Image (cartoon, rainbow, N blue to C red; front, side, top):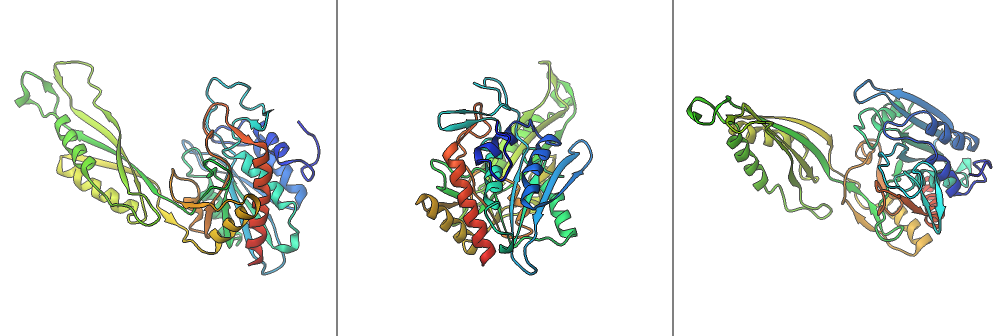
Length: 381
């Protein structure tokens, strides 16, 4: 691996240095040391902090800023250095980055250490007098995310460093680099359902109260719900049954409890609290209860200035006009949108979270140029 200074390393070399730091969620220590060593020589003031308590903490986060002239624009790059567990079956060691042909292999190459490396390479070519640049990097995007980007945003508000615009480097491209950007995401809520009954012998059902038929009826009503038909920018909201459990090991006993879990992905026609209330009412009608965890609300960055800047940069470097989309899962943009307009754009997502995750070497270089154009244009508005 190259030992040259960050200011002269290629994007691939910067990515290799990050990949070589094992950083399964929650990431801490070495990978942040590496990123700090890349940013500090470029004039960034680096703030690192550990937030939260078990079981969802502690989490390490990094906020780095290079201030421009007074009253200049502030553009932020956001992302995460934590990765999902590599799993078994890799051709080469997942945290030993390896170039084979036109690809760079390693856990996090796509999601999203490759994008962070491209961000670092992008900012080193932007003069400090152009404006303020910052990095909002968490170690807990792939996990509970309770003490990651939210804690970073709290710090940024406390020190008065609120960006005018933000780009999250999630891997959004599908077939070719630049063919899709995300201007919003659906919200997400998980709900645990439970029905209590009375245990008894199956031969004497009148002496028991079987909770299973009640839960089945509850789930049938929920499954039949049509929340909406979608909107101009969002697909239809959907409810999915993700778990069903009775835990009855014997055949001649009516159980005392039945449980299930549902997941709702919802568009901007709804909010999490209203949906939880709807499910609670249905659960109550069937003699059950509902316990919910809202992991994010739906949001949309209306097509306009920021999407135009990102689109123009992609077109200039690739000749592709990206599709504006809200498809897929959630990301930390669901938090960042409360601070400033945010759009997601990054590498091809075909291999993310998979064995032999890999990013195109040329894509890494092109992505850095696209990011540079985006930041320059955002600072010049």
